[in-house]
Image 1: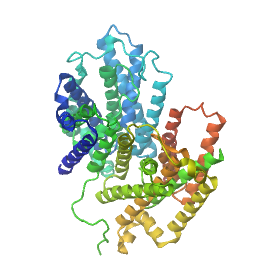
Image 2: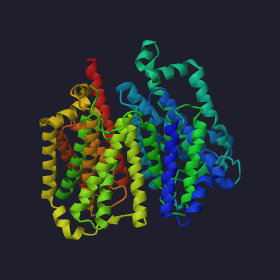
Image 3: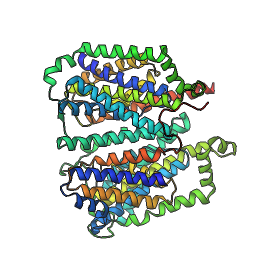
Image 4: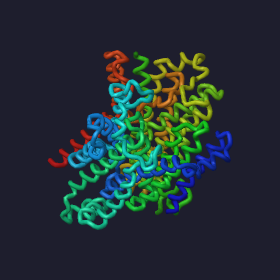
Length: 337
Length: 278
């Protein structure tokens, strides 16, 4: 716990340093860094939206992790979900939004799921590590979607690089008009709750965790480990795709180039901070959401570029996944005799 | 054309040999891509801030070795997952370079080298590229297979217990291997920036990932890596040349390294699995 808090503190310190170096009025920026997400209804809705999306992707990471796999392809899965849902929504009728909206959201989930399914099949039949294959597939798919959205799928009339926008009826209804908060966000907390119940209160969840802890022991106990190689990563990718679809239906109303960027990496950050426990994902997502929205609010009027987000993500990865060990002060030690 | 092949060959060979060192030591350096970018940027930054050419390249080497050393100490000693720690470093460098570029140059666009015109003919000479590849490859091979340090490095990956038995800490060896690999990738990045004559955002263009493929194809042997890099460089420029440089969209080409890496890994794994079943 301590090293996670120090990792977050380090992220804040780095941003503070950058703000002092660049901002015209550092005091104002620092205030915004901590309180920006609470200054207006609009900003607060953004915080809830970001946290909600991260709860979904982080739940996916936790599910895969508990089965012993690392899903590092979240970025591509969310992006694929966004594209699939945006394209599906275009062919759906707009007079029955109650039916059409869930359909295109699920279509988005399935679009992301395909990527996870490929990783799962590769693991199941060739033994390729999910960690590596999911990352590589995602990297390739992101480049292809970038290309499609800027090229053949681009809406000519739009000044953004995006697909054709959704019909107004097909947008997810707002909680607070004019903000990024929407109805589907209310259902999001059910995902980690359901995941917690599944993992700790059902036989399949027990088998999944056992396989994650010790694959050989699970196989020895008669658990079909092959199935648990395949479906947890697939379901994890579905959750990422669904989050991407929510960005389309709830925020952008089209697939924007790079519109889902950060969902995958930050989801991993949230899962790492939450200790890969489904319930701790909720507070961790709020926390990272506050950090991200605070940075956005503070840097709005500074010269800090958007890519600074990568800096923060990288720092969190390095600090949290490399847990500092207590013993040993010197770098170069001779091994013990 | 020949010049382009030679430059790409040099860049990929340097980064690939760096990757091979780290792979032999049992800690594959996933962050080659990041160090390429860092090398290119630190070289450009030092050059525009008034350091001479050689000084700028040395500065890039020292920066990458220093950053690589700090990262390696943290990664190896913390026993974290080296793949995730490498990705973290990639993200850190990608974000850090863009942020620094905005702070130093007031934008995140192209940064031109100032004195390129004076020294360009020397740096761009094909003979220099050829010499760099030959010397590095030969030196790396000799180091790895004909010196005690090379044996220690390989043992850190294949048989760490043997090192411990001889009172050499395998962690120390791994840290040094990662530092060396970061410095080599940084040198590759510096050369890339010299060739283009500027720092361009995302100029590493996934070359670091291609270098990782070459590590696998070349069986982590410097000679194999250099040979694979030559074949890849010819193939890449042949395909872009034959179709006309405009017909392969740049963004689609960016997807290729990922898919080639994945396909190669899967093929290797599938073959291994078939072999073990026999």
